[in-house]
Length: 420
Ligand code: GDP
Image (tube, rainbow, N blue to C red; front, side, top):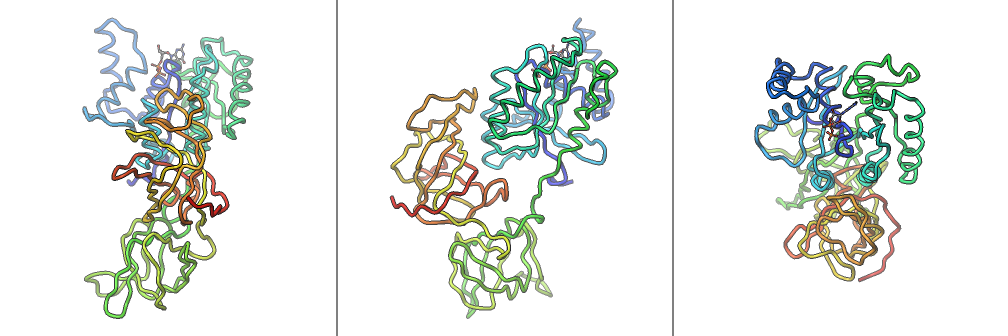
């Protein structure tokens, strides 16, 4: 099973609001634990004179899967209904933000946990903001520990009202609010007799309603040109299919030069017949019906769905450079195969990636900051919004020889032709 058959869901919540308990419940109630694990953890609790907790169960499960390897973002897997899930547990926000922005991890949906007795915490708000920064749109909010508030509908609704209003400011509309008790298993996998006033989906049913985001072949063609080789009289355009599919006979547009030509052959070594197509992820080369001059960094696509071409865009950026990122200074931007000089045109907002605290307005972006910025490049380049195509919507910032930051394109602005 490959990654793209899984729905990838991240679970976030303020410490102690019940994330591990909820995950332990999900794994136990869907029979996803290794045989004997539940009994083993119960026995250990008994031996140590502790009350059994579903959270211990999940922690033990996680430890076993990790096998002592330190990983930035822990992942666990389970099947339910006719779907596979990868659950991303975000222990630290810094690692999670870094992995998401760099492309090392991808969450298509999120479950956000709020303690019914504690209500909306400052952290719950920051988590909402973190999800909106990463462009995660499919969100279910679990109002957990309903048993501590007598399963009172009014408590649930007050949280729904308060948190929805907050998320609305961020432009996020959660798919679902689920009142639950992870400890008792109410509305986690099965419904709840304790909350007859609720007839919506359980936590697991909410997961089932999330959609798999289009990826790979379902997306329009994007072929970032890596190299152009000259063999005899022929030119071979080489690169890797970032999205969609290349087909012989397709009419290509190269951006930003806007040159067009038709694919004549797709090249391959040691084959009896040359292939007629090349799918996503494939490194390949092709020839064209006309000799046109294209260069590394251009993106080939079909005219019905061209990438954007601009020198000005908004992005969310994760900075990890020793030196802070400042304006009025050139950096190198690398997006797919394109390298171009860039500068920081404007900082809109900065937060500390570790604590998710907003940072007071300042002129520079420091190590482990996440920032909403506008970037200007020296020349226009082809790109996409991250939400439309992750490969041509993601970039890194290079300072000298070091990769110092990574970002995702959130909004393409009009070419501004201002030079620097
Ligand atoms: P995490 O830090 O978010 O992973 O929280 P845990 O899952 O470790 O839970 C923190 C505490 O809350 C533990 O003592 C749990 O037993 C308790 N807890 C979790 N879910 C519930 C619940 O639905 N009801 C009650 N009463 N306690 C819960």
